[in-house]
Image (cartoon, rainbow, N blue to C red; front, top):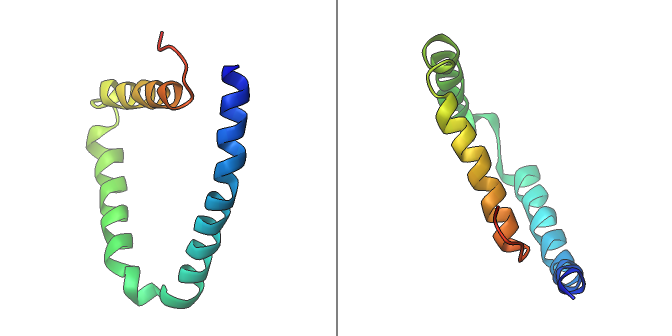
Length: 83
């Protein structure tokens, strides 16, 4: 019964997912230029450099915790019992 409910939820959400993806592509195709996102790209580059030099070995715990927390959210979202 739970699989049927999950399937029905997925089928009902497909038009919404399609609409979001289509709208996102439309926005990026018309409104986003390199000038508009240059500070975002600069911040991303600075973070990646900082991570590579200083944080790679030190934040492994948080990466694993975040990964497992994502599994927990997905299991709750699909009506599974967390283990």
